[in-house]
Image: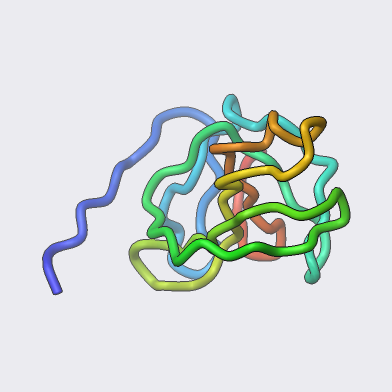
Length: 109
């Protein structure tokens, strides 16, 4: 495995709860109104220091979506998912955005 390069963000950040690696800026937060199997989740327009898993179709509360789980690049912990494609027109705004599950996050305040 190669060397991992980690991006350090400046300003208010959300970090991985397990290794404190920066994942997103508070300014990139789009919505706090999302939910996952484990509880609350936040929608971000951008995320860093993640690796993206394989795509899969998944039935969500808002309908069918093509998503990929995302993992912290440093510790490998699953931290949420990325919306790759929305199957319903009203959900297209989610495409290319990232959901970080609140239970896996530290900071943002």
